[in-house]
Length: 134
Image (cartoon, rainbow, N blue to C red; front, side, top):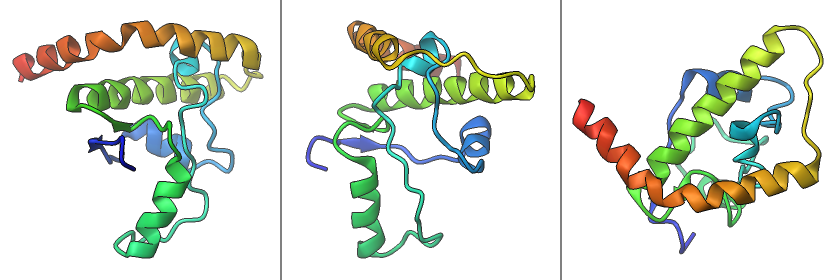
């Protein structure tokens, strides 16, 4: 993945919970979940021991060219990781209501995701804030 300079891997609570469902897709149900429309790669056939070159190639293919957590800077990767966990939390809490989800149309989800691109420059300030709080 030549464009990726930073790839973060974690097992966040809501992201892991979403990934453990039969249907793991992050659905565009609000502004934050729609932020990731078209940017999430899903690896549904994985080797639990991801320590081989073959599995690395498989993961790269699953991530594709425009995946959330393959970023140019650490700040961008942190920002995506942080907001992806918030998006997964929103979806899991919506699921917990037991009511049907109001999923945005592809056109609205795509437009929302495009709208978030103008905020990419804020990632460094967000990252600096969290570092200062530590």
